[in-house]
Length: 543
Image (tube, rainbow, N blue to C red; front, side, top):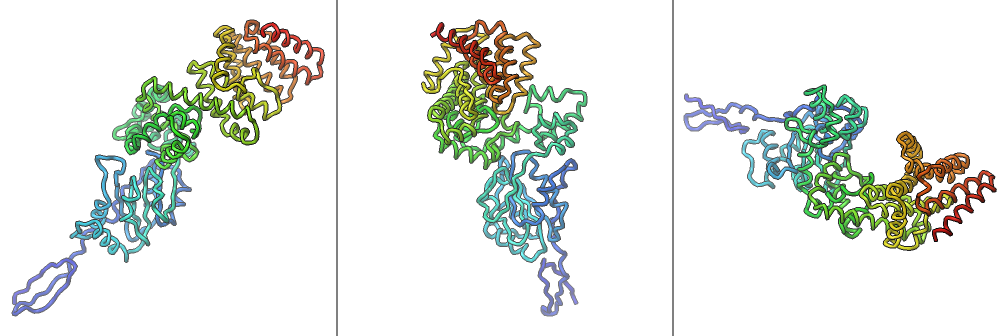
């Protein structure tokens, strides 16, 4: 008798064919690869809350800025929980045009990992076979890493297993998903990772930047990495195949031309928070379009949910802004300053509850715009913005703070008058004058200590003009607070400074009027009357 052993894969047959008895041995189980995930980094720290959120969810989208640690979080989750049916992982390279893969590619890989030898060619057939293969398995984890669109992952979604998608986009088109927006590390965790609290802050607590800096410190422990970082910023954050700028480049490449221009112009927006008004002015767009583009940048994790740049993203956007011609950048800044100036003056003119709300929401941005105007040589514009802000502060607190009444005239007239007033005094004094009004804004919103520190430094360096300017600011602030003794002391310093004698007459009138108010509040009416008389004499002489 002849005995033949035939391997038919999973098919088992036995019988007689003529004089030949045919039997089959059970085929060896096909090779599978269901636990081939890479280990998480040994440097992984923190994320207890995020790991807890992942534990019981079905479909999860983990989104966040490039380098924030999305993949590492999911790998640690895979290690900490039991998935008896197996773990599948696929990297879509969704932000790399040269390496991007498709759902069909992922399905083919998963089917082979599940032991399927004959993988169908069509994506729909692959998807149907994939769902059939996993339907009866115990709980599985499927990680769909680095996807850029919801369409990339839809064919791989499963009903009864956990599917975790990572993306730089929020992928809100995935119905029924739990959305986990991953932020930077906490300060203790970031410091533990890089070994230095100052470097952790410079790296913006971004895990990719922190791990690179940790490696750099190990390679050259004696180097002043903080100093080098401040000088070269993103150029420092490179180590072997890890590169922060390159990671940001991949996100930037996925933006449309309209979004790219908007993104780089936002780098010119001063202050911590990007506003719709400011963004619209910078990019010369309507508010509705600017609002849409800001939302799209939030969805892409290039701006956070409070419309703020991460520090390293702002540095990257600033690099990108250099692609704009210098004349284009200057024109954008002019539009920004004018837009906020016009709105501020118009709001002050018809001041009411809506105007108060607008000022409260924009006071820090207005302060930053005034400072930007001053620092870029637009001194007259900075003075007008600061005057508008002090008008608002006066209306809010009930304290008269107007150094010059410009707010009924309109932006162009106000700037022209400010320029004439500045031209009447020396450049150094006018610069100090501008600084005083911008500084006033800083203090009225809660930064008195900073001005006091600036005053101390100015005194140490013998900067008489700045001593006078800052003393007058502190006098006005304490007048508003009802602390008349301190107000009088600061006004005395300002008025006794020799540099004030040659100051803008309007500035001198403001000092004498402020001193009169402080003296009157302290019950020293005769002295108050003398200062009011002095203010009137200066006004009559210069009118």
